[in-house]
Amino acid sequence: MTAELRRSLLRLRNALWPARAESELEREIAAHLDLLEDDYVRRGLPRDTARLAARRAFGGVEQAKDDQRDTRSFLWLDDGRRDLRQAGRLLIRNPLFSLTAALSIGIGIGANTAVFTVATALLFHPPAGVVEPDRLVDIGATFNRVGFGPQSYPNYVDIRRRTATLDGVYALTLFPRPMSYVATDRREAERIFVTPVTVNYFTTLGVVPAAGRLFDQRDSDEPGASPLAVVSHQFWTTHFSADPAVVGRTLSINGGIFTIVGVTPKGFHGTGIRSGDAWIPLGMGNAVSANRAGAWLLLGGRLKSGVPLSQASAELEALGASLQQEFPDENRGRGLRAAPLSPVPGNSNVVGAFVLLLGGIVVVVLAIACANVVGVLMARAEARRAEIAVRLAIGAGRRRLIRQLLTETFVLFALGGAIGLALARIATSVVVSRLPRLPFPIELSLAMARPLPVGA
Picture 1 (tube, helix red, strand yellow):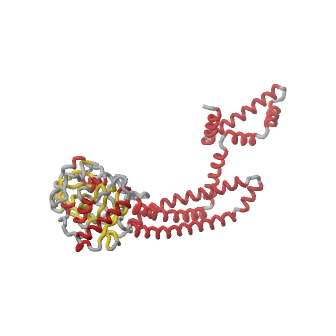
Picture 2: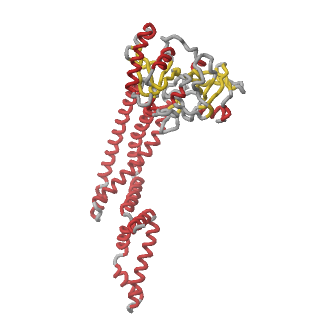
Picture 3: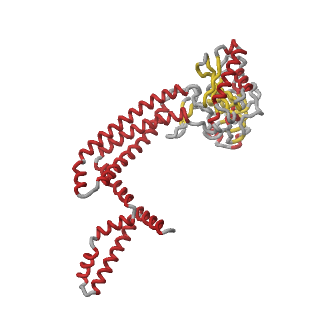
């Protein structure tokens, strides 16, 4: 270890443990004074006279201590510690000022954090348990080039077969459906929410099961062909105590017997904010309609490696035009459009505009809060003019005073930030709880709180 590094480490130790350094300093100065005193005694002076002479020769003890503290520690750390203590004392001495300023800051920060937390969950949060979500797209139907709506099953089949830019195209019902559930070893029925999906749904998303397997090419979308079910991790935990032996068990859903083949990973609830308890093949939950004019399915797909969204979108537009020509009666005016995966397919712009409006409102609230704090700080500074003048008169440097005032402001804003985070957590839960009740559950993954289920 080099001498410079050793010296730096010793200084850091003295700064972090000042009591130990102070004790060593006291012993060192006392040793110097004793040596000087003994030297004067050897020269023939009486002990009392020698002690006074030693102190005169040594100089000011407190000044020597200050010089040693400056050289044996990091001065800025010591000053920072003293500034923090002084800032804390001043805040405690003026509780009304401290509470007013901290609450103003906290309300502004809390409101902004709550709004942007919900916005992130609605617009930017990637779905849990999905592989490479940036390669996933939503496929919507347009009418006269406007909108982003659901599709029919026959159109889904044609899109899946004809696309060359997508690795897979899946479909699922618009919303999870309430169904009656009865375990085979129980008599009581309860309501659960089940989502019918095409059997390539989990494969296209790249979902890895927590237990068992998920739907794959061995299964079928044909009506009645695959009486299978995949349950959510939460349903598995609450109803089966996370027992791995659940795979192979049967349950009754709307009177039909389904065999559980697997469990989704923890946190997975699909690609949107819709949440459910189980997934079944599309043909088991619906009479797969041959009506091409019907619109009851949400479509999505995965871009092939190296294929940009613009290329896939152009292909889907061409497919939509082709389907209009082939089936003019059912698809008149209908086209296709691809968009990046979103928790609210086709409505990202509307939700984004609403969130932007809320964001503008809370930014104004934050600006008002900051203006209030500035006014309070200026009034406080005016009241402290005499104190600052006295400090300057007894030798305090302007830079040192500025650093002290900045430290006080930092402590005040840190307190306000802590209050803001606490208010943001409460406000986020309140905002989510005030969302309109829906006939199906939704789930928002919020950074400020645990995932919150909302809805039925």
